[in-house]
Image (spheres, rainbow, N blue to C red):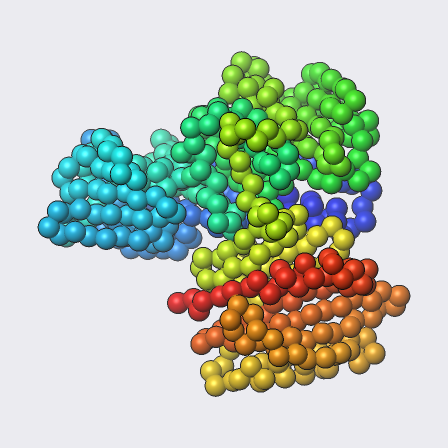
Length: 482
């Protein structure tokens, strides 16, 4: 994901201000190609792709053969299996009432066969078309269910392709669903301290786990608004604006600019798109608000977009008028969950998630000081004990590293999440640099679990911060996945 790569470079690459700001511009173009098209891959993605009449559907990237979806009076009906496989929703069938109940993310939908009356969380709703049974399969209205589950449905007139997309961070909060159901007129984040008016034609298409990147897209127009928050560091309004104008000069047509003591705005365009970038500096943070709009001639006239941009504030007023996206606990953690692999961990609020979308069994979290916490999950040969797993790791380290470079200091028996575990402390030296690696191993029925951290020497010597990181690791809990 573009933003994670950008931030990782900032944290670890030792790059200059110019190299930091250049990706901000590139970010805008990449978002257009990814987010607006529904191609974001970070977090937990739910996707359904098919053409009406096909018996092969793509559900979360897998080919699935089902009863062919049908269109009745303009409403697409799909087998209920499509919903359960894509969303992991629980389904109950009441044969006497001929009633299907779907439960997902604290939303309950009741549907009655051959009846247009349905219930969403107990509230009666009139359907455009009733569910029905076709060839022994229960067929339900796709758009009605998926939109009530917080997803977006798109139909391509040219290709006749139907696409359902829902993207969440690995958080206990279902952000897209929250905003679809909210009656509040504003949206914001109390942890990062921002808020804005929230027109109902905007959807939250992406939110990073750490909450410092949020991408809103318009329901009916190809445009996106990206809110990114970074630590201020060497940023100032003057050097941000200077680098922005320097980058625009050779590639775009500058339309206008504004500048204040802690705020700047730049508007520019190319042949097809309009761009508006706003920058705010407040309380040690920099807020980047970037707009991409598909048509320059109409972007100024779009009230939804202008309302959002003009109302953006680097103050969060906790008066109940703002739908708060923050999921930070009073202890300063976010709960990270992986529903597929059935584990969770408390992550410090300002730590960033970094992972490879092709390796779901591995995830890391990093801070801006060079510290890392990671989780690795592997299958292992049955019959091996926890001691066998630990010995294998120790043997590997001995084989790969010289003893003066990578030294095992101690091994402790510990308990994590009610399960027995082994804790290993390594000291790694590379020239003048010393790092401390703490590994924790656990085993289940079919999988071995390895959580660990890599700490700088300064962090390891800071007992208070080190303990917070250890608390994060010790919060790891798992159930065996199927």
